[in-house]
Image (cartoon, rainbow, N blue to C red; front, side, top):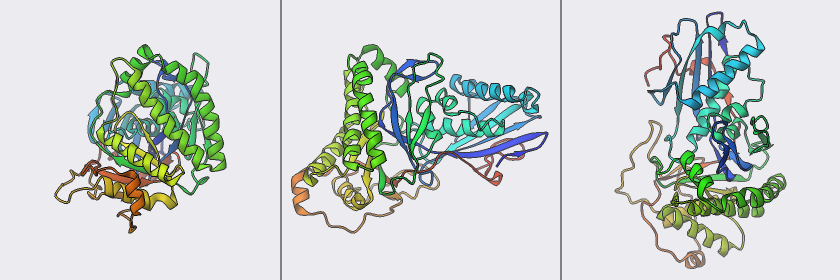
Length: 406
């Protein structure tokens, strides 16, 4: 809800994380963040993962300021400024005498998950920022995914719920490089998502610099963008519409593997997967082969964490496989990441390993040794809605315009 009078406007929003099944990797414009290929993702439910942002516009504020996870950050960050100036420009276009145009803003944002852990925190963060700014400045009915895009490319996909396509576009201005919903979050109730957190730390090579190096040095990247992705996009869109998990899963796995092949084709090569990631791939591939069907569709972004798309009926088996091959030794104390982190191994929609004995022929056909403590925890979630505006009682800023003490 926008709380506004002639002196102040305040909005608090949440926005979701999205995980791509057709990957975005490589830009044709580094400033406007225009990609070389289309991409497609599922929006994860905000009950499990979200960014939360409060924007306050008030006459007595002397500078634009931003706090992220309780720490003040540089407001002059180029991408942040791009978003701010675009929203202000739209507000001016709508009403050039709007009192808010002469005011400064305070922005306070937090994630309920580790930042930069390969969990698409910048996508959720910028989608949330743009949504809150748009509501505060009264331009929430304009096309906002292109504004989120100039903050963080994949943030444009977090502006919608369900399954979302980001069209690369052809216009040099980026006006047609926008996101749109392919199917709403309730479309495929059977679809579930398991995030296997291998390492919640910062990644070695940032996505931004990784992409730049790939575009400069990989011979495979343009073949992928021009010859492979267009066909995969149409096939996976049809699979989502028809709720065809076999096709959806196969393309998801292939596209993840091709993305990491392109990283390997980069010079110097980029390794986002670690030994535990590779172990997860082998376990899930052998499980799929044994099942004579795709049951666990794994995908990895620019980091070692695995995201497994699966169907509700297969969640208990997959969680048992994870528990069997990546057991958490009792004596290992997991460092708590957040106040709401209960330290448990399985979190989210499922909170414990389901009671189910793994068939001996399955274990035999997987035939691998366990890797104790390879996985920190598993988060069970599902597709969810796009950004939401909260009641002002949820504000992260106090009456003094500064972050409330946590």
